[in-house]
Image (cartoon, rainbow, N blue to C red):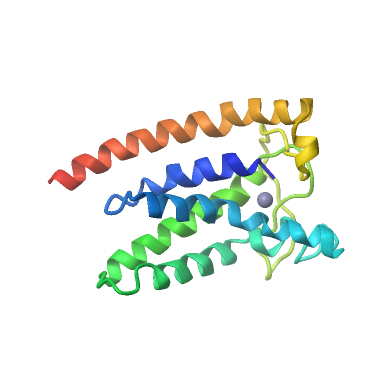
Length: 180
Ligand SMILES: [Zn+2]
């Protein structure tokens, strides 16, 4: 995995695409959605092998998982409010993007197994050709070491900086669009 902080930052950056609702609540949902796929780390404690469909970077890192999660959030979001269908579809799409941003980052890390993008239909583990992000340790203890420092450094360059630029520009464009 990339570190949970970086997944969250990228999620918040993607959330700015939802011009109609840049609320803190929505940003939080997006940050959590971007971190959610790593819930599969419990598999390590349950003894599920890494390469298994339910192992780390398995089905929770798939495109299907992200789509289903997006649909669920779009359905549950502010149930009592009368949002239009289009509003909910767009919201669900953004949440899906945030969730998919997770395996995309993971596929650019230097270690572990690849990501099962097409699970459960095809459980092949995939990496991208370019992998500039130093893989983050799973344990907290290892994170506070020179390894953790290298992770932070590479994520600052490859995730934080692009996220801030993307989020900032989007926010500016969004404000303009809303003024119309
Ligand atoms: Zn992951």
